[in-house]
Length: 189
Image (cartoon, rainbow, N blue to C red; front, side, top):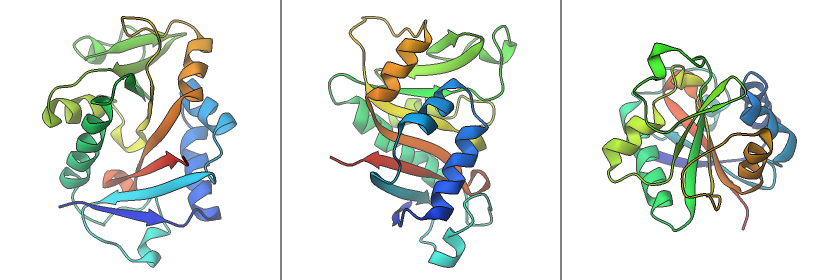
């Protein structure tokens, strides 16, 4: 059983998001530049309910197992992709083009020497869980839930297309709690 706890968007929370995004690739940098995190809601996705004191150090672990939050995130992602015209893009923090680790992964997109994973249709929670955990550095997970472009096949070939994805972002997920949970930002409606 996972807990989805709404957080106060305070300086500590914003600092953590900034730190994660600054250490990322182009997608992370565009999110940092173009998303007003204070204009939305942030939830922590954890295996158990955590008090405010423990919630202040988003980098620290010791909160609980990852299986339940990972499953809950996969369920959120699957429901999201069931809506028409939606997709999820995930940034690969460590692997490089030509890396044998990415050869058999689903939805691999290469963009200017960076690797992204893109999903528009996933049939089961298990498939979604595998998709979300494809990056080699799952603790530093950065992903966006956004509108799908007009193109039939998933394709990101230019930085402008990546910027278009950021412009249609409705949710952002980042790894937190030393890999034991996630922060999920949702845009205000």
